[in-house]
Amino acid sequence: MGGVGMTARRVGGSGYPDHELIDQAGRLTYFETKVSSQIGESSARAFYYSGGKKIKADARHLLIGWEIEEESTRHWKVVGWKLVDLSHLRVSLKTEFNANNPDIYKADALLGES
Image (tube, rainbow, N blue to C red; front, side, top):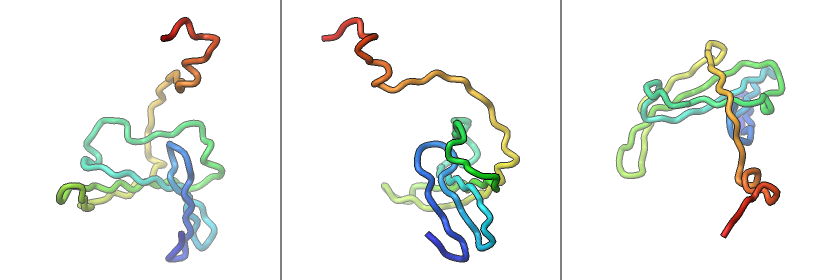
C-alpha cells in the first residue's frame, strides 16, 4: 500500500500494532486503528500489547480511533476521529494465565470423557 510518499505494511497477529508505516525519509511509525461507537467513553479494554514480537525498532507509535454510528441496518458512517501519540499512554499490567483447547485437553491430563 502506498501513496503520498508513504508505504504501509500490515503486521499480522493480534495485539498492537496493526501496521508499520514508512515515510519518504525512511522513518518508521507503528500504527494502530480502533473503531468504536463510543470512542473514549467505554472502560472496556481497548488496547492490547503483549511480548513485543511485532515491534522490531525504535519508532513513533500512533493510534487512530474512528467513531462510527449506524446509519441504517449494517451500514455505518464515520462521525469523528482522534489521532493519538501513544508515547503518552499509561498502561496497566495484568498478569494472567492462559491456555488454548489443545493445552487443556491433553491426553496425559484427561481423567475421563464420554
